Image (cartoon, rainbow, N blue to C red; front, side):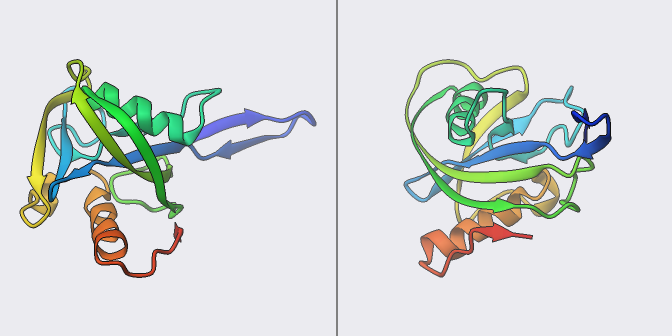
Length: 158
């Protein structure tokens, strides 16, 4: 949570905005194994993503975080949906997650220190739920159902 002081002197706790990127190519999803030094969900596989920086759009965050956490050049980012549930799994900060599908090009650099390894997983052979951080398996399942199978895609998941 972020504590903010407003013009009238009142204070309030506000929620963070984060972006998670689904990188899907040739029937596979790219996931990043979180480094052991991470405060939340270390050693688990996650979708690349992170906090929205000041003066940055959520689309720019998706592109930046993709490159930082995978080393792949982000070519295109398409907004998929937002998750606003304040009780998201593994998240005590009540982050609001904007989820993008990101197309990548070539691997242009190494991934950053937040990541131990990156790995492409067949869409039908993902790691077990207990090895996936936060609610990222739920995000992948929403992507499969509403993007790959062509179902109606709600924009907001509460």
